Length: 186
Image (cartoon, rainbow, N blue to C red; front, side, top):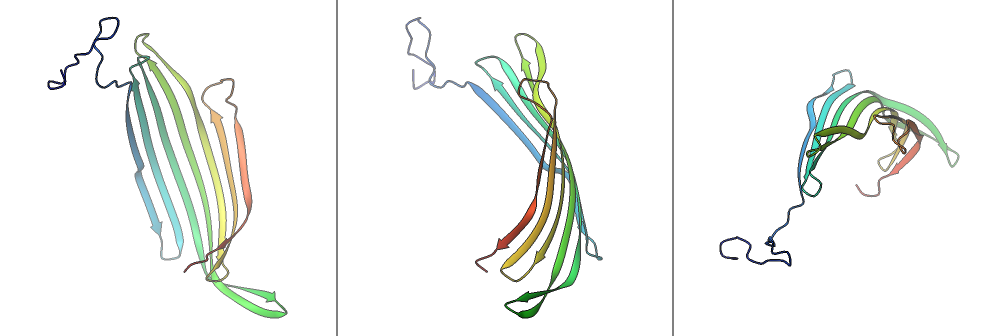
C-alpha cells in the first residue's frame, strides 16, 4: 500500500516487490591532514609536515561483503626562498638584468594504500590490493617577468604492491624537466 510505505505488488514467485532496492551502502572518511604543520620562518625557510588518513567502507548486499580501502600518508617538504636573485640575459643584442626570488623546494612522501575484502558469510578476510608508494620531488622556480615563470623539477614515485597478483609489479616512475608558465591574465 503506497500510503503506508509497505509493498503491495507481488511478482511471479509471489514475493513482494519493494519500492526501493538498495544494493550497496558506502561510508567515506577523509582527514586531509589529520595532523599538519606549515611554517615559514623569518629566514625564508619553509617547513611542512602532514599526516593524512582516509578510509572508504562499502557494504554490498548483493554478495554480502565489506570492502575497506585504508590510506595512511606522511608528507614532509622543505624549501628556501632566495631573495632578489639577479640574472643577466642578452635579448635582441641588448643586455637586461632580471631580479626575482628563487624558490627551491624538496619533498618526501610515504603513502600506504590497502584494500581489504571481508566476506561476511564465509567469515574470510583478505588483502586484495594496495601499494606502498614513496615520492621524492625537488623543484626550483624563478619568475622571469610578471607574465613568465620558469620551473625546473624532478619527481620520482616508487610503488611496491602489497599482493603478488598477476597485474601488480613493483614500479618506478620519474618525471623531470623544464616548465615555462605563461600567465595571460593579471
